[in-house]
Length: 370
Length: 202
Image (cartoon, rainbow over all chains, first blue to last red; front, side, top):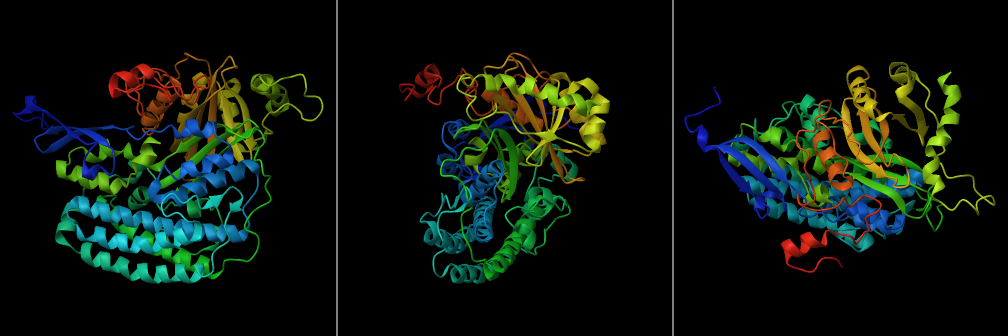
């Protein structure tokens, strides 16, 4: 009874997307509204479905590696790392220390780049246009490093199964340090633009609250889970690629609202800088490739390996039948699982908040649809 | 005692996929291709065996990753038990693997994680084509979309699921692309011609 109004019969269905600038790609959301209040949100996804998992079954292990970059194209390096680690697990080999350190440097740089894109677009959705231009400037520094290292900026295919294809170029360390030097004060600058801004606070606090219990129920991971106060990061919980050597904090929030998620991601960028600085100081000498055969034929078996991607837990479940191609390759995408919580987060919110909530989810449709 | 008879049970179960390979020219080099698992020892598998006795047919570990193989109808009770009594409160993923030459055609795989134990495990069941496994949405809300995706890609329908529709492909699409009998180029040509106005196929 309290939820009903005299206009109850005029429940309105509003379609948002797939061609909508604030849905971050081709997400379509069908909203059920009572006036300005959201009663429920149904996501229609799949517009970008390319059948990545089927492609995986029809390519050799090496051939498939570039495809994973096309899932979360804002964090291609993370995707590649997860895939390489999964196949390495099946082969029961580990990348040599030098490769691991370079991997950490590039992956963390990519985390910053991914978070910068999130920040720019999230702020743009809410009406703060300025940050978008600034974040592109900082991201450029990072993409330049990728370009110099492997020739590509976005879909990098930076790593290979067993280690790295390319030795680092002369001056990578200096470039990385300069980029850190450049990015760190800029994060403070963004905070000065946004954190204390009344409109920003008003639009973000208590919007899209998802508490820790709900996060676990929905399988929501990454910054969203941490913003709800759960100090859980796969880089520390189950370290991979030598993350246990580095000293860094896991930022957490308290309320699990949109503002907390903003704060957590901002702090994560600082922590990434911290990791990069430690890693780049002591990139060990040595080989960059483990001893793996030219033709990769993992023994019959299966493995699930996951990493902490910028968006959350990115997992690969690979079943090998002993041939050169995976028998089954499943990607557990963080964006897909996190997006599922949209319905719960938008209930009772206003239409304008839906835009803020989609922004705070930090989804990439390439990964949702695969 | 259960550990005793397990090695005898295992090859019999994993035999069908291996049987698909040409059996004749084998004797030269390799033993039949089965996963080189070792038994998973510890409190949890013992507890699971005790609770679900004959419904848990295998508790193994491979590359340091633990999994149990259970009867299809025991999957949800096991998930429930793991969630409420063993702290496996995070359903990471649900997926399936298709073995068309096997009578129980699909492997249904649940990947679980426990925040409290910082441990991962998998629950696997073998189901026949057409069998409708019970939904896990009553135990983990995350199962909703994950099961929809399994339905979309493999055509495994989950009984009791609140919203059993396709999720990535269009709702009126025919066929289940991740089944092994679908080639990589097979699509629903009729749908493509009807909706996109182009010739289907490549």
